[in-house]
Length: 174
Image 1 (spheres, rainbow, N blue to C red):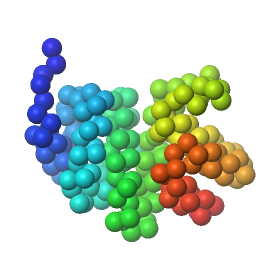
Image 2: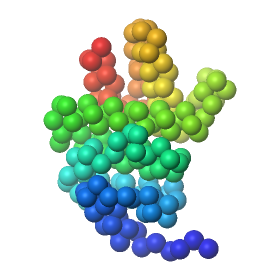
Image 3: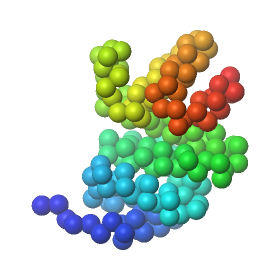
Image 4: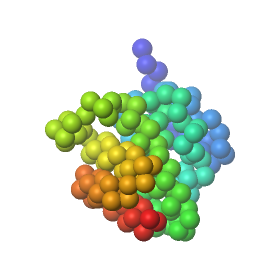
């Protein structure tokens, strides 16, 4: 039977670990999808320095041991996105880059892009649809296909309009 977790205590422990660059894997392993999602949004609203703390803590290479860790890290950065305005331009760009990198890794690991078709993509959760088209955009960028890159960025934006700042930042970097 799963051990009962006091989420307020867990939130405090996790945030302390984040701020001290500690290991959070023990905490991550105690949580399920709903707890992770709730934790990220709670931490992001309760801590004014959340975006900066997560930016300093989450490196895309650090959270690739399991799908659960990828989900936790992606959720943590997604919760930081609304607070990006508190960051300087370089930090904001790094936050966006790290979020996109983790989201692409996450989406490409839970879905087989070769099997997805247009109808399949439309039934994915919103952030996964966004991540899929960011994956496609990155492939175009790797192939030096700037028009395909921009087209996929714009399609990603139609999947999640709340990510408009990310898309405009990426387009301006071309």
